[in-house]
Image (cartoon, rainbow, N blue to C red):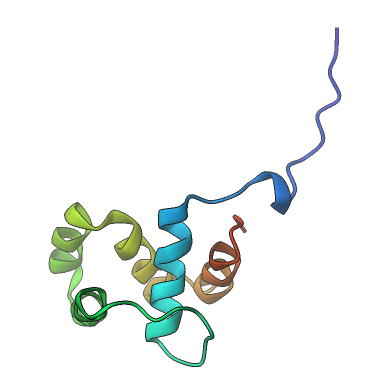
Length: 93
């Protein structure tokens, strides 16, 4: 018996609410994006994460894995902004 499995589309691969919000926060904080702004704690956390070296980024990731994952995408992945926009819309890229 064989099943016909089509590849997943963006509509079939939603991201978690935490991933979506982390993408919103990073894109909003970096400016030029129309996403809800983060609160003051998250703003300070993002500032620290964007300035952190790798060791301190790893420490922040222990407590805030989704947010730091989004920061890492922005800082170190050439497709990071595109991925964050897709996640902010609720889909994996």
